[in-house]
Image (cartoon, rainbow, N blue to C red; front, top):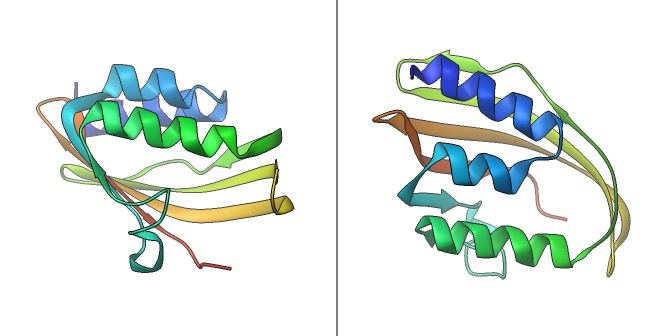
Length: 123
């Protein structure tokens, strides 16, 4: 599976809210997830391994009171890397309704995502 194929599959699944399913299908067992420096040590911080990434997703979902929608751009592919812009419209239990926009960068190796890194402003 090419990087472009992985990218298009991830985008399609995320557009349907299938985040955990995408991780199971497309991520390497030893994948790494990297947050911005200001968030790296928080509850959504940097983790290594698919199990830790899945747990991180469950922690995020636990803080969501209502999911209103998601927008995901088409992927921009460069070699073994791709990026998308993702916007989540959610009501958080502790923060109310927010729109979170981030640049997501992914590294693909041996047909699996081995790294994800997120870029967004805090607060």
